[in-house]
Length: 252
Length: 179
Image (cartoon, rainbow over all chains, first blue to last red; front, side, top):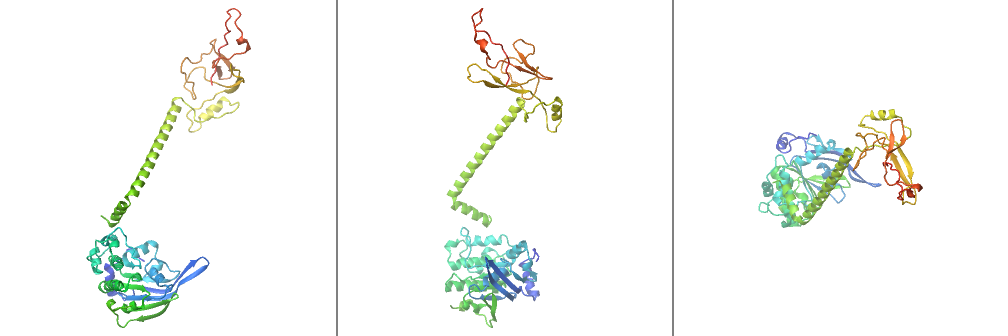
């Protein structure tokens, strides 16, 4: 994997010209060795993610969703198998290359927002834009998630949903090729959750960011291009939605 | 200003009490260290200057029957600036007023004062003069003589007796005791 790959400017061109998937995963296995007991989180996953695709990963706790997302995002390494990102093997990358990959190609959103309490929404996003190669401005990123009027508020002055939208703005401010969300609505009520999903939907639609969202909520699956159901470390089922529903039409 | 620097400044302001306390503790620690280091360095320099001024040797060794050529051989060792040899003899002294015999150490010095290691420092008076009546050569060696000067009146039983002619206590023989 090249460490000086240009993440954003060239990726748009790749989307136009390359038919290859963003991710190609084969035989992905992850075993956690905890004392005498081996925990098999992933048992041979084969998967492809396409350009600008919106996928939902569904499954019960312990089915391997977060492990899969962490490996795709370069936060974890598999025990066996391979992951290719735009033709480059992530599983053969060293720490420096993985850092570059995470910094310039991947945006993360977690269930708990991980905002810095002593910085405003704008400054939390500036943390990323100051080191990204071709970022959105913090103002643009916040406008995109509907928080243009809350830029100078501190996290303690924002609701849970607003904080999560700031986290999404922070993730997309560097114009990542991939947005990975681990239960972004897990800590939110339905109304706030829908607002957050709208922000993710808009990023996927307007910026063409390949998006993978983990959720326990099967209703959310209606807004995805493709739904992958994981169980016991394997892909139990996979389906493509013939018609995507807007996040505003979702109920749970 | 970078967002990380802003975060640092705000966090410092929020914990200003702790920050000031930490700064004071660090300042006190650094001051103590500088004071200790200065004192240590000053003592080291003083010791060094003192040793140099009074030509104190850095290394000592005791041995029996060292021939003179050994001094020349030691002087040729790389790093040795100067080498000196001495004759050192421990003696027992009867000192007036002491119930038990005192221990004395006789150390040879050159019979003419020259700059040498572990030199004799005269506070008053003069250096030894061979041949004087009030100085005695205790031993005669090949190259060294050991002179002693009266350090404290050394008396024997005869000294306690009065001079039969003058009636005054008889004067004890003057000797030079070095050491």
